[in-house]
Length: 439
Ligand SMILES: Nc1ncnc2c1ncn2[C@@H]1O[C@H](COP(=O)(O)OP(=O)(O)O)[C@@H](O)[C@H]1O
Ligand SMILES: [Mg+2]
Image (cartoon, rainbow, N blue to C red):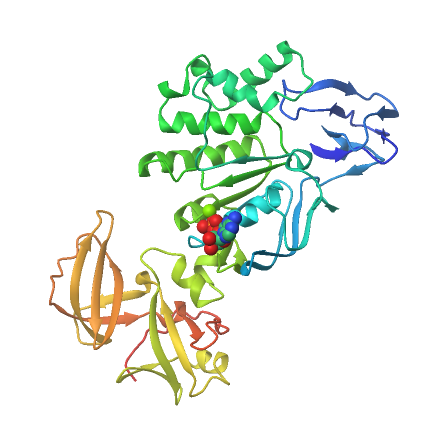
């Protein structure tokens, strides 16, 4: 199935060789919301409104006139935003491919909501361009952009039923009452809230209300979904459930999505791609695995992952890492990667799972400060001189506060940062044989 937009002359030409495309024009993309299906047995010219959007199996057709292919690609080009003298966004460039689920994550106040509101058209950019499928939309109103936004405070109308709340998104549409009713039913089925349609919001649980809010967005059949911390008001258990539900919904209804959260777990579990923001700038864009395993900056490394990556001040001296009074031997492949960084102040980044605890006296000596069992694992907080670290251990560990241990540092998994710029240095190819032995 591909999506297309009618050409400038208000038509699409389709010449099918073998595949007969089923083409659906107009408002709906969800079966049941669709109108006027065409089955092309032979060459076909479809007349439609200018830039009308449709879906169809055009991929099998020999020729299409008009644009066929990615429709709801969102592209931000050097977006900046200032409120008076306060610069909030600095030259944000980002491309979200059609149907991708992209999560913007960053600490509170870094500009995520502002960016989302600029994409929605609720806020104007001070500079830069917003393109939907290659067309600049800066001057278009939120309605003309065909986006739907779901907020943290989803504000359902308390005096309206669930059905009327969902149908509220269609209030300006030209659909008949019967069509609207069918559309509401379709959305309710999709979200599995059909039995709740006649209830008022006060008779719903938090998760059900959130689903109604999503229904109100879905029924408009937007090209782009924008979510701004939609799960923040829910308790931890429900948040987990809704995360999975939103992802499942995106599989059923693959619409380009920009999802904002300050919660790194939400970002990691939901995103096709994560965009990490800090102080109005993008720090890194990547898959959850890239962001976790190969953070490009110290900020990303510290922000993503719980507990945070251990950050250890170090210096490269004579092929070894000087950490306080200790020296950690580095394998030869690190030497090549670190050529040019001699005598520089570095930060050694090591995830808690890359510190192994030993009781024989090899490795970095440390004293246990706190043992924190979580059930599935135990976190061990310890110190070596003034250096405070966290290690993950098996749940059955019997370590006690005050115990003397030795740390095996898995330097092949470490990330080294330039202390001044905060940028990660290139890593050597992993050899899986380089533990942090004392030099
Ligand atoms: N309308 C506004 N007027 C002035 N400052 C604003 C306005 N909206 C947001 N800001 C400021 O912009 C910064 C980013 O805000 P926001 O985009 O809401 O961050 P986030 O969603 O990442 O928490 C904050 O410092 C906030 O105070
Ligand atoms: Mg916000």
